[in-house]
Image (tube, rainbow, N blue to C red; front, side, top):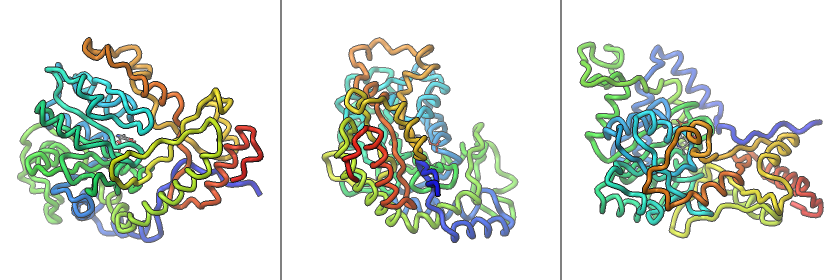
Length: 392
Ligand SMILES: Cc1ncc(COP(=O)(O)O)c(C=O)c1O
């Protein structure tokens, strides 16, 4: 019997989640309503944030956040190039200039010392990224922001269930989470803004639905008062209840989901240490809880004998899905051809970003995987490397 394809990721959904979606479908109210309200409440409880606003994606969350902060032409926004393209696209579409900051070589996260020299009189925002399930070193970044009076928005797309120095991500400042299908908790597509600022939450809530003043669920009025008026032009980024309800059951199981991901990641770490030319990321050296969103290796072609892209092809031939998180944005076609590095950034090359962009490869990691699956992946890697003696 041939082995089933092992995907990079698979949502951790069960029959109760599927039944919950059917219940919403039968309820007569399928768009944004009580399930979103419940999800916002649960996200606040989990993260310790004062306010949460659900959205159709984290990309929408970034768009609305940049809009609410008034980011526009002439402004610079500091963020890594080693991130998902959506952040840079949104900054660019707002007419602002992304300023790319390098990352630490082995955590793939940026730091206050890398950000500091890039700050100019035009810097209006800093967006650090919690990477792969580990938290970025927030204390020095917030201190830097305070020193220069520049807001920080945490890209927490990977960070549901992640903790920094004993505090859940979301408990301080403003964070943008993703609920996309490969994330640890998913609504198929979805995102959440968490914040401690009532006015900011209200603004995001308004912008998510046409800029209308009222956005409370009201069954008789079909979601809002018919008298609601446009306060400012807004967007249509609300999350349907059909989607929101999916996350409610997963949130109850989040500890189990994180535990299983951690168990599989540790097994990967043990087994991969025996394969030459493959290097894991390092864990941050400050106290944290890793929620293991992604399992990332680096492939050194001089030792491993083939480069990352060839390896992804080989893995696929063996029935294993792999991914790249991420290809540096400044190296992608549009930005290669159109982006000009601001003058003051020339002294700070993106050395670690470019090195990792070429070598990183994400391996399958999801809660419904078994330890045998991890052994299959690592044994296959050993075989591809050409060492059949490496027993997993
Ligand atoms: C680091 C990062 N930021 C933002 C996003 C955007 O999330 P979404 O797909 O929900 O728009 C992603 C998505 O993968 C991401 O990985």
